[in-house]
Image (cartoon, rainbow, N blue to C red; front, side):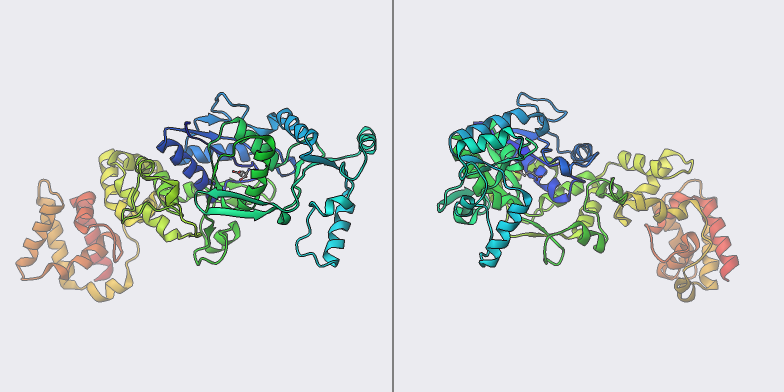
Length: 501
Ligand code: GLU
């Protein structure tokens, strides 16, 4: 049987980075097994619907390079892929469960449900549930006669359909990540399958769709593990084979203390969403990984290793490498600590891998200076190992376009002196006389000029950098000399000598 997996987000807001990881693992698993990766939109909870969220999810996956084979806007033979368009299907199966005595109608009002919970609390029941015991005191088709039930329905009273779970039965299944999971139905709730608005709940829709879409493996976040026993009962009640399950470990805050929430990320100053998200309710803008400057490949590499490790020392994986190496068995049980410094490190690595052409294009798009491509390329190359994000390049390379107006005071105090300044002037004059030079010949020339007075390179290098950039550190100094050109080098040395001597 060929592998079919799905990513099934609810369009209730921006896609959290944990959701992107779920999508990624599904995608890698599908690719690894020449299977199919499906994007299904679980939008049955109309109260939580957020406009723009679905498009955001799609854009995010696109940016990250996680491409669905089937799904909303991708087509496929198992559609529609938006649950709100599959309503009738769920109703049919819910009805079947009621008819077979595996589910029942319940008419309880919110007040009656609250009163039931209060009663149970007073009786010191730790975990008040609508279950095999309590359901017999409630208003439902198990306690009412068939006529009473029908009368209520005819009168238009709102009702839900609940699953009828056995009182005391162990439900067991083997999770690929967590191993055997055993839960007794005494701890479970007779969950609602169909709401009073005629829409299915997540549980009902999820099971029907996974079955109809022939999903072979359900790979999803650990927060859904508590729902899995209920899902197993639903498969059993409907007479369907359950898919395999793999519940992914939580993403934890950097200190390992608790779940990585948006609030925690905000406080620590790093993104939690792949792309910028404008919250339509609050108007708040959250800056995404993309807009912060993360390259999609770096983002994916970082994300893949949050909770999965193929073993060994290798850390840099392209998408193809990930597909090759991926296996569900190598997913960790323990939560994964989120380390933004590691994400930055990955970004720097991928910046180094970027082709010169691509780098030049991106750099040119960030600066509004009219400069020729070769020069832009040289500048970008000189800067690329000195920044974490491409966006930092214009600022890091500002000195290429503007003569320094200020000079690092510490360097002035410690390294600038007339002797060095004179030598630099001498060097710049000789440089102007040279027909053409590059960083190596410029360096040779500087050494030659210094040797006349037996001066070591170290004596003038900081002063030269200061004169050219105003700063204490930066790209390779002789590269700067090469890029600026002899006239500009001479002008800057002259300016510094005038201002600092
Ligand atoms: N709609 C659920 C979510 O928002 C899907 C959970 C699942 O994959 O079963 O995460």
